[in-house]
Image (spheres, rainbow, N blue to C red):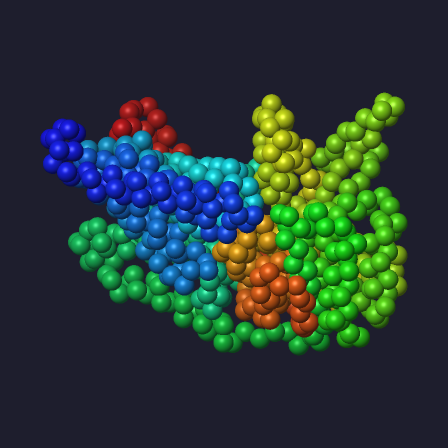
Length: 594
């Protein structure tokens, strides 16, 4: 039946109506966003509506391809709904099954690999996953957020294509290793390159339930990824091939799920904090809206709020006062003590015995020519032709009662776009566009090694915002002697969406992995304390200016994960390389099964 006959028979009218409704919904979301100062959840409706309308517009006529589209859609939705703060986290243990069935169905139809088809349907699934789980990044910058979601989906789809091609060249017994090793290798490498975005690492989905992942102290988040992918693949095989049940009975799959949970619960109920004396800590949440208030409000007005919140929540037992990321702007490190805000708060610190202030600042330095190594510097030429070399940093500092010396740390895991320009050596011609969009071409200066703030009852790891989602990176602080983790962040960029909750819960996994307590100060979002089990204590509410007094018990134990890092991921990277080389050497001189 041709298209005209189909339309005459009325069969596509339901799809046409659905497309029209989706376009109307997307247009309404766009209209709302044009009239609202903050967008909240509207970007989700905007992007999902137009994306699904586009998918329906090119809806396949082939019933088998419709099945593939349905399977990929189901996987995308399940993966998206399986990330915090969704209570449906557990669906990730079978969220991959429809996608695996789709990939295998494409191969089985013609008994050959079809990279284009697999990429197309996988891309659709991963667009849904990325948009549902991380649409909130669009609240910072709409175009950049959309590009980030779709680019990440494209990279993920490419990984699935590689898995598709490799696994069908080898014996079926290697399929599970191909799937797991290539995917986790992607997750691991996604921690290190210029467009690093490990937010959707599968092990992070389980952050919703810390009682279930206490074994992360041995494996880190990649242990969670391994667990989720193994259970998914086993479930897929059980569903796909009934005969396979003889080799892998349902009871075995059930044990794959239950045993790690039982181990985790045993650790949960038996682990105890150290016997060290608790240390009084106050975390401040000033609540300056970052889009329209924080960077426009005079620093002195901001300082008054900091002062009030601080004096209302510290006493003679308080040893640490913690302010969020970039609490003070434009601090010149060359003349740090001459800054009026720094002098003001040094006076506050001096008012209490043995008090230390740990705060995020936006800083810069004027550099000499011999200071340019490993520095992302800028050049300014004034009207007289004099040249000034300088750099900027997203920093954390510690100021101590009665001391002129201060300790400083430069944020080392930078956010692509706002803090560093990816692949700038190759994309140098985009500099004018980046400058116009408010990004940074030169980028912030970072430091290669972690710094630990010393001298007090705690050895403090100053973790700045984005850095808290990197497990082994945070371990670098602990290996340098940190007995507590202080996270300073600004989660107000994403408005009242799941973004700030995800950031909190993923960061809380660091407490489990390294068995270190956390004090968390957010400009807005959720400020709190987190114990070594990953329990969130005394959380503040989003959008409220407040401060919280609590206690932090210093820890010195070293977990297996702290000592050895991402062993699972590194082993699977080696397995991935080995499988790739075996495939190339085996089939390199004859045609692949395309």
